[in-house]
Amino acid sequence: MTGFGAGNGAGFEDVYWWSGDGLRLHARDYPGHADRPAIICMPGLTRNARDFATLAEHLSPDWRVLAVEFRGRGESAYAKDPMSYVPLTYAQDMAGLIEAAGVDRFVVVGTSLGGIVAMLLAGMMPGRIAGAVLNDIGPDIESAGLARVRGYVGKSSNHPTWMHAARALQESSGGVYPDWAIEDWLAMAKRVYRLSSAGRIVLDYDARIAEPFRLPGNEAGPDMWRAFSALRDVPVLVVRGERSDMLSGQTAERMIAALPRAVLATIPRVGHVPTLAEPEARVAIDELLASVAEPG
Image 1 (spheres, helix red, strand yellow):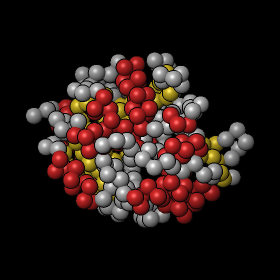
Image 2 (tube, rainbow, N blue to C red; image 1 turned 90 degrees about the vertical axis):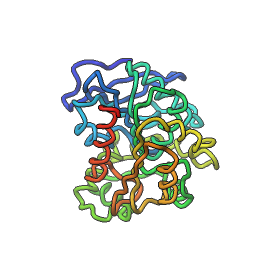
Image 3 (cartoon, rainbow, N blue to C red; image 1 turned 90 degrees about the horizontal axis):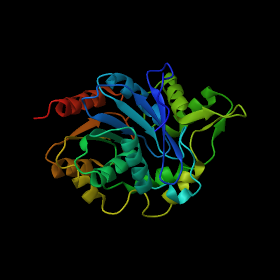
Image 4 (tube, one colour; image 1 turned 180 degrees about the vertical axis):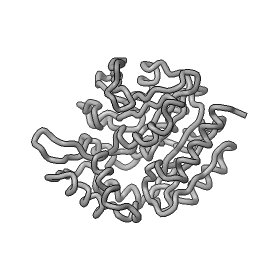
């Protein structure tokens, strides 16, 4: 693993590791107690480590937090083969990070796609996961949400200013966060977009991530309920946006019933996905981590 040093003045260090197929991948490493499990935060399909900045700043330095960027996002390299943009490959990449960073046990925080990867890791690395937060995702994914995501992922979007980008997000996703002010949308724009060398505001991911995602059956993987069951022995928090079109209330209740240590937090007036900065999410995450820090 490379990149450990003096940090960048923002409360974290930029760290890099290599995937099995030779890609240089990136994560933000926020310092924390070495005697506690690390917290590994994994973002949604088109998102990056910036999504977890607020949560990581809240948790560090009590916990070490690694906010990762899947291949093809943020500062992680783009894949030569777009068919490697699938959950199993992401899970293999995350296993590489866990070993490179010297992490023994860890808590996974997975938003949407990141939650699918979290479930796969539970099966791949038995006994290593100390707890899990699954943010607005479950073993069954609603068709309406999938159709919506397939409708926009991979499509070009660029703007002359950050305010233009913020307005575009507000127009397309206003129903997800109906109570947001323009300042919230501007902050979101700075998480979703980056400034290009041509001076345009562009999406911060490889448009080719859409190629496998648009193929039927590639959203998650085989038998995700079996993968989910690998979390049976650890505390699990299922976070669901009240307006979610990806995780139904019925599926969320089934998830809670399936695991003895699972709890549900529903975030009012939010769709897919909660930011995890909401008060209800923050309290629920703190409670889960308290049970990890002091088991039993």
